[in-house]
Length: 148
View 1: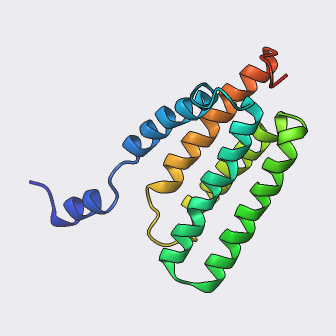
View 2: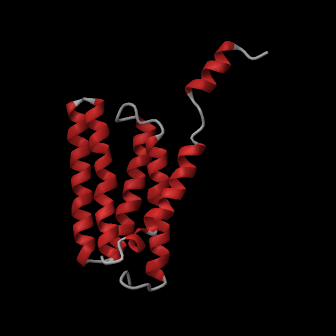
């Protein structure tokens, strides 16, 4: 017989396997995004996606409702806008660095719970970030234009 506390613990802390698995899928799709926007340079597509994914946290911060959380998340998203803008004409490695940086921010977010109500989102987003960063790094290393 299972104790009530054990049942409650399982229901409060369900696994994060599903969000991470979906994050891997979305990360692969994000790495393939330039195929959907074939009229744009790959670097531009990746650069546009970086602040987009960071901006989701602004919405989550607004839902959280605390002013300092909104201020921090807006500042962080703004930093990713700067990195993305630099990546359009600079090194494509800035995109990889931005994605890895965002993934690390996601891991911090998950560990600290800085933005309330985001238990599954940071692991999902970190998986997206790290998978996309790895695939883009492979593309850069392989010399695929226009990333090389």
